[in-house]
Length: 289
Image 1: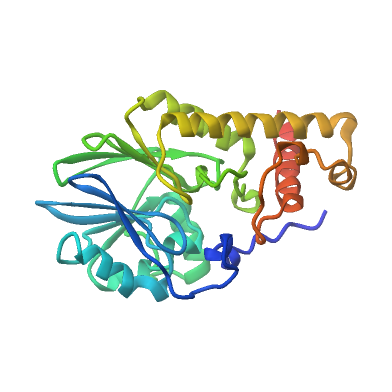
Image 2: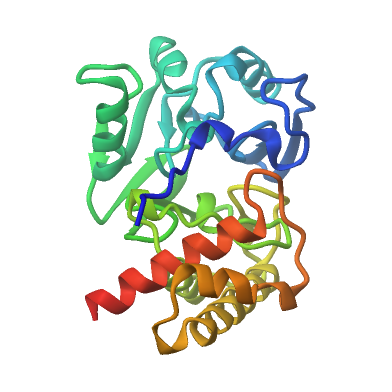
């Protein structure tokens, strides 16, 4: 079977507009005295500010870096000391080089380092200067931010950031809070079961007051993440039933197993593409068992 092409260049603000790098309506949301979320074009950015300085989680696109810096300056003057990447996709890492040139130190999982090195080359400023395997903790701004790696979820390099003092968590693209199903990047080691396992584990670590930051969509709470998990499990069951008797991809697509969920799909991630990705993911899972 021909390998699916998962073009991350389309993984932009086309979620709604279909246009890359149009005028961006940035919005800052306060979660605590030291933690804000910046909505723009691409992945949601978490901004930590305090006595030690600034650090951010994800940095959207290179062309937006100056605008993002201007938004950060509304909270605190200066450049971020650190940039944490939740995974390697361009709508979350596109500003790495610009922020590194301004003095930021990029942090990410080992697999993010490897994928960015493959794309940008050894020694590129896009690459993390600090990478980790299972977990690490950043003690900065009177906060103990725990970075946990969840393998083979959205990709093979996902990091979820837990903010202890702010009682918040940034899930990156493990969580799409758009009343829709996520993009499972099977070409980058992602899997539907991995997303379900990651969300299940995160739910075990949060409480009813935890602020849940998705990769895309508005900040929500534990109940919002629980509803997302229910949707993921429903989709998995529908796909598994449709795939019974070793049906081919074309046969499963003809059944349209996800239609009964009555979801709205974006242009870059239509229902047929989600079905293909889930099919390949679940096929890979069954082969490894």
